[in-house]
Length: 285
Ligand SMILES: *[C@@H]1O[C@H](CO)[C@@H](O)[C@H](O)[C@H]1NC(C)=O
Image (cartoon, rainbow, N blue to C red):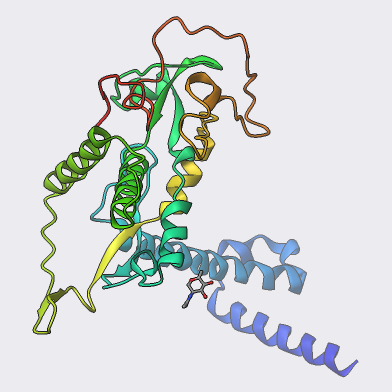
């Protein structure tokens, strides 16, 4: 009871204040409806809420635009540089524990980087059309450049590992050279101008304590998976070739795999390990 009456007193005080300050507002001129004190209290809150909302939206948009103002998103998956990463000397991929590094290099999987994009997407993004995706011939098959380059690093790792251990080379020399050259050209293309600070140590060390702005590889993978080409490369490249590699459609993809599908064109040129393994010319960078 006491609370209630206090509350009422407060309301009355509030109303008195408004009566004094807002004598000539429209709200007051509206007459009888105003007599409900709760309604009037509510009306006072509206501008406060609007102001608060406006400030919140402004703050939020400032935060977002500050991180993105000077950057355009990536051309196809619309990715921004979202986080910083330090330049480091060693990661587990270069660990002296070769069991660990070997497992990591072998765990690199680029299957999701082989994607099927609608021709309308190709047109709107100034992409050339590509060989047909068998389960939807309105789409072309592409491999995302980042995944391609990761694949290249992986086969170079495999070749080096085999060399170091005196094993027979399992990857074709032209393929390895293609990969070396592809990465060389990517470096030239990027013309990365980041100055890495040097340090006087026994070994040449640079970039320590410095950071770079990175895109989210996971976000790229998510985008790629949303455009799956149902591609799966077997552990041993000769186990499953050609169309068979595209028969691994995930649940819910909507694609109907046709075992008897006969492509009208010579398909699957330029995919990882396809072209060179079959002796064909490598078309893709
Ligand atoms: C090397 O890495 C493997 C795999 O992570 C681990 O099981 C093993 O204990 C490591 N060996 C040493 C000597 O740290």
